[in-house]
Amino acid sequence: MINTYTTSFIAPPVPPRTSSRAPAPTRHPVHLWLLSVVLVLQMIVFAGTFVYLFLRDSELQREFESQFHDDLIVLRRLQECDDRSLEYSTLLDCKKILDKYKNILLKISQAEGSVGLRLGDTPIRKPGAMAHMLVKPDRSQVTSTKVLQWYQEHSLLMNVDYLITPRTLRIRFKGHYYIYSQVTFSGWHPKIPLVQTVMRQATAAGKKTEDVLLKAFCTMKNAGEACTSFQGGTFQLEEGMELYVNVTDINLLNFEETATTFGLFMV
Image 1 (cartoon, rainbow, N blue to C red):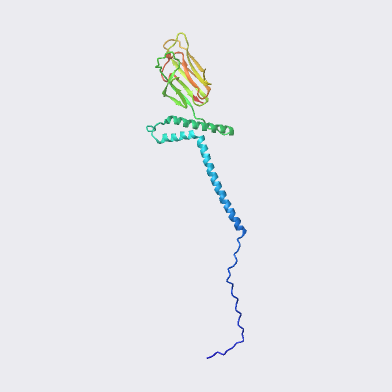
Image 2 (spheres, rainbow, N blue to C red):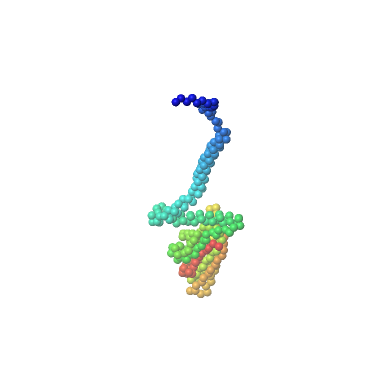
């Protein structure tokens, strides 16, 4: 069957074909380029700061080790004394290392104390120093000596040295000390008085000087009696000074440990 139907409507126009060419590239905004530059500069600054701080820390560490090299060695050896047994610590005198460690602590406390005094704070108390010596009979062949000798093993010593050969107490730390001595005589001399004297010895410019700090006399009325003299006083002592006790005649002494003593303590 043939369709002979006709219409009067006009056909719609054909849409134009789209072009096959690619769109033109768009340009990057200026602010993106500036942001990239800022990020690069920031990374460079961070890297430079890290390198500077690393090098500065290494330099400060080298300066610290060079300045406190001896103190660090003392602390390391002190640690070795604590870790090892004294029987197996070869070539290591732990007692001397401990004394050096105490000296380091004293320097620190003195520095902090002086700063506290300037700032009005309460200063740190210095480590104490004291000695209480017990008399020791003189077994030497030299009978003309008048200087008393003392037991080191039975006496009390703290931050004070006892020198056996000159029979003196040597001061480690300067300060004010109360010094005392007690001497008991069990014999008398017909011509000279019984005297005990505390002497101070100092060395300056290679020369030794001596002066008398304390002197006490003892009087006996009859032979066979005992006479005890005691004396004490406070004096300023410097580091390295030495103290000893002189008597009229050592052969006249009573060598009981509680009868004849000598000592001092820091005040």
